[in-house]
Length: 384
Image (tube, rainbow, N blue to C red; front, side):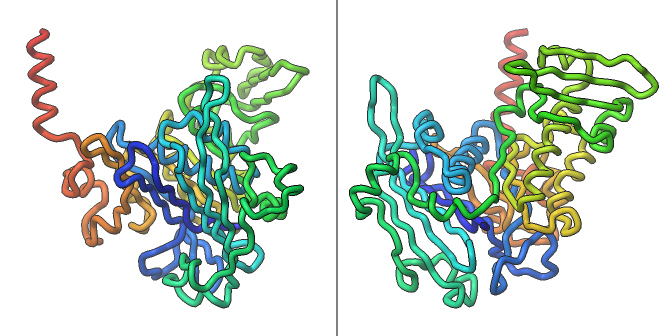
């Protein structure tokens, strides 16, 4: 299963209530580098980046994408995914366009919010599932048109009463389609800020040595309800062992902890052609290691199944390592409202480094203003 587009309407705090992310290539395709062919010339992105100032919605967009992807791919319950989000409100609609088993689908879902025992509860008000034969998509312009050349195959509110009685109101009608896929949606969002080992088992030495060449072995075991971690260094017979994952920070570095966990999830995504969402990809990692991780998804040798790395970054120089412009989104906050727009739509030129464009604030709202920095300096001087 390949996700082609995710979009939301009637979101709180977003400009016009909308947020849309294309996972397909919308600009011209010259060499196909960093892309995966789906069908009929339709190509999906292997990497998608979000860049912007602090508090402009990068993490919020990643969480929305995670919720939408897990709803479809993991048949996840939307209540824990959406009920706590300030972005989701009664009447929010999200749409997912995807390709599966030689057909294109559009899943359109309207979310309801109600109070239960003093808590917000998210459920489906209604859902519509459209299907379009691949022969009807001859070009990208046909890809997202489901109103005139597709078949409406399922409506939640029109399901048989017996079916509705078994289908929980917070589980999507798309579960019958998703049961035939092992495509996964993994994430490294909250764990990005907590130095905890996130994978169980033995981490290959080759992975460990990229982050710390002195480590020979790292094993995480489940022992009943406890987790036991063992670390052994090269040329040292002693095994360091702890059941306190926070204490592991005293043995190995934060970069090694994050790096091995991130690569373990990346391997699963690469194997299954899935999706890996990472907030602040560069956190705890050396610049070159960031490039290495991105290249794992860009290269057809390590990514033959078209897995997609979706990440946010404050390190804008990493964008110069990405070959395309239509897989980069700029997040902004204007008058308190968030937005995410494609770099390709804001900047047509290819002869200027992306990092220079963003850091120079040429696109407006991509770098701190001189006036605000000056006022901050003056305030600090006044305090001193």
